[in-house]
Length: 453
Ligand code: SAH
Ligand code: SF4
Ligand code: F3S
Image (cartoon, rainbow, N blue to C red; front, side, top):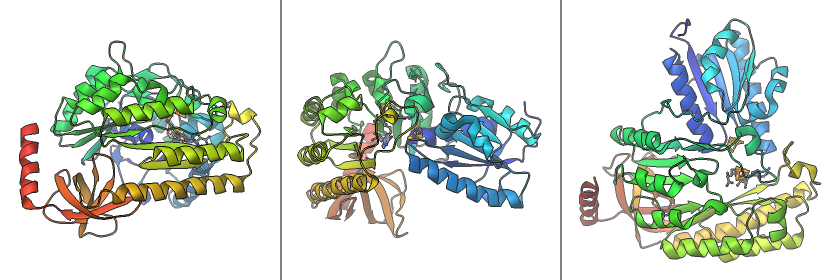
């Protein structure tokens, strides 16, 4: 199809959530089938693509910083193309062309047009493609993945929830799901290629529905492809966390016992203004049901501090809820007004400094809770999927437990992709440290894996 030289090299940089990571692999797949080669070296690239996030103002500021850097490369290599993809492309559209550096602006549903747009841009025609689609799910395309241990599989796109603070329904458009058959086919292929962990992705993954199957059925089917492969999913909205899904997580041995369930606030008044469609009590009961059905389950959440009109009393309700529910992780964000959302019309009443103070208070509390939770694991043995050398030392390996805790242990003879049983002897709020448990346990895990396979 392409008349371009096959030696043109593309460098892709990815920001934002895992959906963007998965999308960049789709983009890599599209461009490589059109004769482009991927490069990890920006200085070597003919095309630089940045896949962007628009969730908060600071995410966008970071991208502007990167564009500044790209301009220094472009000065050295004036023929180089720069393209902005993803959510910021969708939000800002042709406004991004005001920067002379930018040659292409392509939204999340228009990636099939990239080869054509790139070709035109090389001929001097700058391009914008930002139409959102009700059907595009890239179901038939094979993402270009580097071989590894963990793979991301996007199963649905878009979001219909319209939380009042959130830009995602505007940058990603309406909800649409792939078919169960094609997802299961892709997972089968990944198992053959040696991937050991699959994370099913969607902005609202548990509202997956392909006409005949719901998300609980999809999870069970994916889990049955290869019992030695771990299955995860992210992110869920509390409203769609069905009993059927909870049962699937509890019953299927290789579905990881970890649920990320954003609560956002501990105040019913704020939850109402956020359009979250649940109350604190509904959320609390849901968490109890999950904990009862799935012993040892790890739970994490997202919180926004400083939403319009959030008072000191509202904030204290959130702090109290975090203290009560004892999550394993919590990500706390300062509220950032996004143009076009419902909350944009509300007064951004909490001063930046106060937002920062509230975030700090919740983060400190959560650190203390996570430290306590992690210390309780000292002396126990945790099964870890080995991902590779740890960042701090080549003599250590890092991996994650079933419950998504990072575990670091001395490098012995295992390879990335293997399971290791690690006896925990030390913990901080973010990481567990230990040594490989005795050979007897190692052998048992080996035979267990063989039976499972
Ligand atoms: N679909 C996911 C969330 C994706 S965005 C879900 O509903 O769970 C990830 C997190 O970013 C959200 O959970 C929220 O806590 C935060 N977030 C989204 N919009 C934000 C904004 N305008 N300001 C601050 N944080 C925001
Ligand atoms: Fe945004 Fe809400 Fe949709 Fe999550 S569920 S992506 S927070 S609108
Ligand atoms: Fe960001 Fe878009 Fe994901 S706004 S969080 S990259 S869906």
